[in-house]
Image (tube, rainbow over all chains, first blue to last red):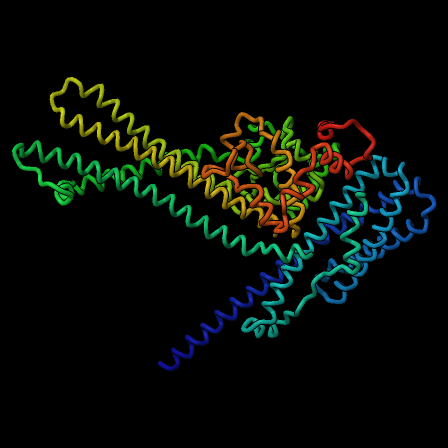
Length: 196
Length: 384
């Protein structure tokens, strides 16, 4: 009788453990999938920038420095992106990605601010198209980031709260990092600046 | 940033959901009440009639108690189940008939589809905005339509499931709203898709149709009795059948009226909910409030020209059929209330957007698309 009771309790504990483990796996998959969405949008952003520089070059010959800066910031951001797409949620990589994207956003908004003084450039259809695509991509990145950060918060809550924290430490589920862009204020204003 | 703190979308959502639940329950109760009432009336009339045929001389017991005694409860129950069956069955058939996909509905309203490879800058911007909000809402990308020759600012969502949904925007909205405002309007329509409002509305419309069918059935009973019962001697049975028909007609009509009131009330609730959900997606109440203010500014000359205006008005972003007062049959809450929910400091007397002329809106909208001095004025930008 007592044996039976002990077996039952053990079975129940195991069932709870399995359920908690599966819940953690589901939340981990959710934030990884959300990160994949950011990755897609960042790639789109980085692919647009060479086109932008190419179409701007002819008009903004005096701003060679800024253009080189844009290309450099884009290249290093692309490098970090490729690195980060393998390790979503890793705090060091996320911080680096945030920094790289923040720098890129800052330089880009500078470029758009400078474009104000080139009316011919602003009238070009190609430039307007690229500007719209970049604005849209900024929005997509920020919405994808919103979804990723929400997913990370849910996952972290599961990793840190009782009782799933026991299962998490048993199977090495670590706390992961949200993605914050440095220079965020400036980045958010980038499309606004380009409108006026 | 401060506006975000002021507008608590989750609280608004919870309240709107609660109130909708109550209203849907009321709708089901109306159907139940009508079925039972018809059953009782039939049971009373036929039960009483049968008794009179059997015992011609028996005195009829007076008062309410006597009336209750006369009711044939078996018959009452049968009739009630039958009536409820008629209402629900016609409702189900109607729901199946109306349940097409969103693109079909959008085309029926005169929409032309916008695709990814459009060359028109305004349409390209619209397509981008829809893709952005789809990411924010984590919903599949719907088909996108523009309603040409429509100067008013309006929008709709159609389709019963997120997978088959379509979003339509009037030409006027495309031309008069800035990018952020357009995003607010699109987010509102995404909210309808997300909250299952098209499905809910379809069910309510189908229920009303079921009630309409009930009064039609009543009329048919009356007519057939009128024509076949003339030559017969049994005047009593004819009268009873007539009374049953009349009951069906009256109760059906009452039900339809109550149903319309409820449908409108539910629709108003869902609009508030959609505004709140839209803010959840975009996290900025300001542009959505501005879009609503622009509608208010245009309302004098804005009227949806579409002949289907009356049928589809519950699907629209804002009330299309002009109404003098926010009556009980309005499908949208008053504009000012919606704006105040998003922007508590709103004052119609001093707000600049609320009194903006359309010409200025178009100029502002185009600033993001092409150089200001270029091109002719007017609404032509989306037709290029």
